[in-house]
Amino acid sequence: MNKMQDNQIPILRSYAVLRQEFFGGMLFNFFSPPELKLDHIRFKIALMCNGAFSIKDIKDCLGHELNHSREYVDYLVESTLSLFDDQSLLYWRTKKLNDPRDFSNFSKPMINSRRFLSAPLAVIWEVTQKCNLRCKHCFSNSGHQESDELTTDEVKEIIDLLADKKVFYINFTGGEPLYRPDIFDILSYASSKNISINLSTNGVLITEDIVELLKKTNVFSVQISIDGLNDLHDSFRGVRGAFQQVLRAIRLLREADIAVEISTAVNKTNMDQISEIIDLAANMGALSFKTTLFIPVGRGKSNQRELSLESHDVHRLALLMKEKEEEMSGRLYLENRSCYPWLLDGSTFAAPSWMKAKNVGCSAGNSNIYLKANGDVAPCPFLRDLTVGNIRRDSLDEIWESKVLDAFRNLHPGDLGGKCRNCEHLGMKCYGGCRAAALAYNGDLYGEDPFCWK
Figure 1: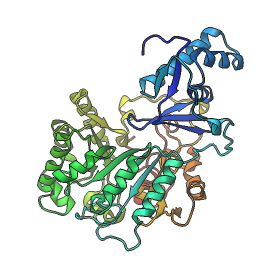
Figure 2: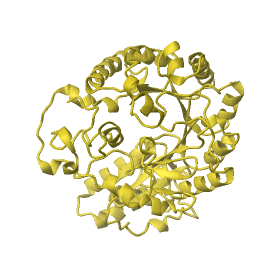
Figure 3: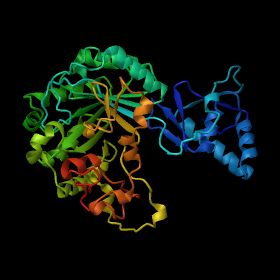
Figure 4: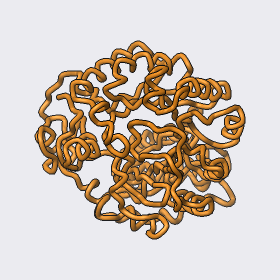
């Protein structure tokens, strides 16, 4: 918008999701992720974007509460509203609403002595175990449908629950999610909520008809795996012709203007093809490319000798990803967090302890959970056997507040073993790496990260 006028009325759009947390809160536009993290003051500004306050009213209200100059208050309010507006979260009026939005349920500060999120931000949801491929690395050992998978009605009830808890993201995966006969009923129902929806598929079942059905949903992006070129992909995925079917699926999706994200399970057999896979992703118009490092769980256990990576392989991958990032120059977003890119700058700054995070750990149990086809809940896909509850039996609050997930939230630097414990990057650029990898490779959830090449 143009320069703000004090008489303007900022109002949060109907699709804006406002969620209160111990640090203030978050504001989310599912059309344009990611979420905005707000401190208590900025969260209060968001609460006043309900149609009952002009910009001047907001400034006056904060001016009474804050012991700061009017210039600072003006800057704080205007910069915050500009941030909201840039994310398409606001619309503007010159008159106040006769019936302002009711944010009274946020009137009291949230009390949470344990200081963790009130609910997950994201749910990775395995909607079926049934799959048409037999991938060598499959963490869920997918193949046949389980007899006790969640029904359509149960899935919809859970979607209602997640929307009520203001979960921002659902990634529907499998198995192969397109094998569920009700998958488009599920996607359509989820599309009626203010949730960002992603679909992870092997791509083999995607046809023109499937694409037409996807266009009727609010699926934000479709993630498809390419784990090698031609015969290597087919061998890794266990079905001849899978590679050509994947390429066809990507073309169909892009022709329909559906965003595609390419993922590669990096392992010993495909390291030499990563550069070409990135080129292929860019040439086919993918939105992004990301790597996941092979972890020997599920079916991957029996293929560990063939597929396992060593830390020097990850170092090589980090160098390649940096080179390709420069080469792509905006054509393709490369997500390279899994290969420790911060180690490439060579800095060894020894930060004082007060600058470092007191808690470490990844998204497992901190912001994400993994929901299995039968309703079991685990911290992440690679720790699927570490069941913390079942959504059929237990409430989401009981699951989220479980002692198992608390262990992931209360992971301290001193809890880690090996070289991780005293690493100068811990709590600054690194938060302990992948606990699932430590468990799978070292047999110790708190062991050193086997992929770190420092």
